[in-house]
Image 1 (tube, helix red, strand yellow):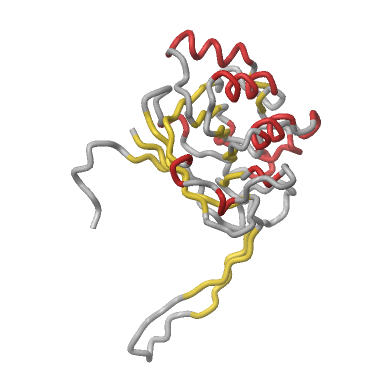
Image 2 (spheres, rainbow, N blue to C red):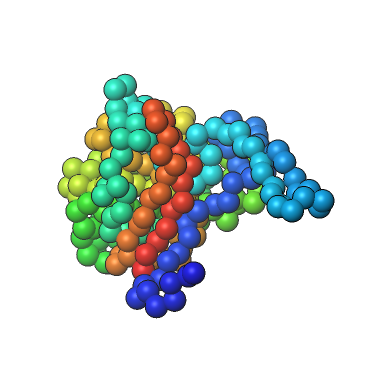
Length: 229
């Protein structure tokens, strides 16, 4: 039974998984196959499926071990760090396929909305999720808005963030290497990629709830990301 009287609004920030969705390598990273179908003659009706997928499909989380040798894995992440105050930095008006979110963008956000609370999960909304239903455009030969090392380092050092998210395949432009991955995961924090519906959240004042599959020794995991307003 749904809770009808809860004093807040829940916003789904998750893309649905299907074989058609964008993937890092451009191939099909998710397979969903019928295993057993309903049997009309049977007293009990069941339908089951098998899935096969890459860890990093759809809206998903990167644990430190994703690029840090000896780093924490998915099953090592603590529940209390997966719920956090949420800040949404909207750069969608400026963003384009080679746009890099700058430290100036972060400071402009704070000038307008106040300092980002320590321990926050910071989402960068670039507007790129509008291409989610167009996998080739969304992947775009791995050209999409990304985040500067300086912006990430500021958030880690000065705002002590819990993690950061973005509505693209990665916070890094792979042509520039992976400095944001190394900085954030190297600081023992987490990254969420392919965030959906971030425009539905206010700039500040909400909470994020990250619910990844608890995969032992996993370095990435598909997840349900929920905004609480």
